Length: 262
Image (cartoon, rainbow, N blue to C red; front, side, top):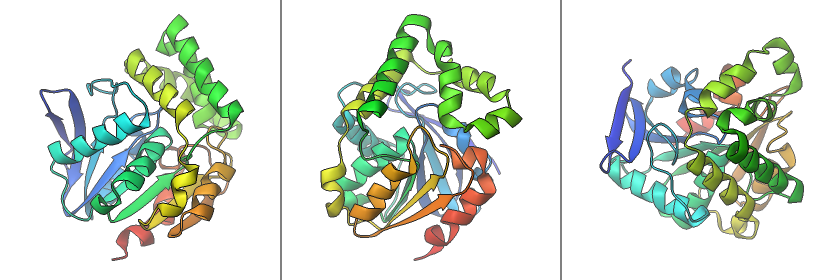
C-alpha cells in the first residue's frame, strides 16, 4: 500500500497518508517521529485513512511558539488543510498525546474518538525539570547530544539491553528535528496543565500505557482515565513509552476493538 507524502500551506505543514475509509489522525511523540508508527501503519491503513502530521519542527513542518493553545490551533489548521472528514479518530503518543488531549478538550465536536498512548495532562516538578534539561542540552550540544537521554526515555532498560543500537537510532531521528521546534515542545510540556479540565472531556477515550514508561509514568495516564468520564485504561506489561514502536502487536491488540466500535 502506498504512502503519500503531503505538504500544504506553502509547504510549512507536512504529513504522510496511507489507506482509505474513516479518518484516523496520528500524532507522534517528542523523542520519536511519525516513523514510530511504521510497524502498525499497514494494519491501521487497511481499515482507515491514516494521516500522520509531522508536528512543528519535524520533517518540514514549520516550528511554532506559544504553548499548548498554539499547538491546538496548529492541529485545527492541520485538520482543515489536510481535509480531515467528519467523525475522525484522533490518536497521540507522548507529546502528541498531550496535544491530542488539549485538542479534544477545546474542539471535542471535531472528533469522534480519542486514543492516548503514554500521554500526560501535566507533569510534576521532576518531569518538568527533565524537559528543561533536555532543552538546555540540545541548545548547548545540538540535538544529537540528547540521544542517550532520549533512548532511555523512549525505551526501558531491558529493551535497551537487548537492542543497544536504539541509542543511535534515536540520534538519527533527533538530528532531523528543528531545535527551535524541540525547545518549543519542551516548554509546552513544562507549562501544560490540563488536569482540571479532564472532567469536561466528553469524547470517548482509550488510554494505553506501557507499564515501564519512565517518561510518562502509568500514574499520569491513569489520572486521565480516572477523571475523564468516558475514558478507559489499558496497561501493557513490560513496555516503555512508545508501544507502537516497541510492542506493535500488543499495541494493536489493545486499541483494535475501540477503533472498530461504532
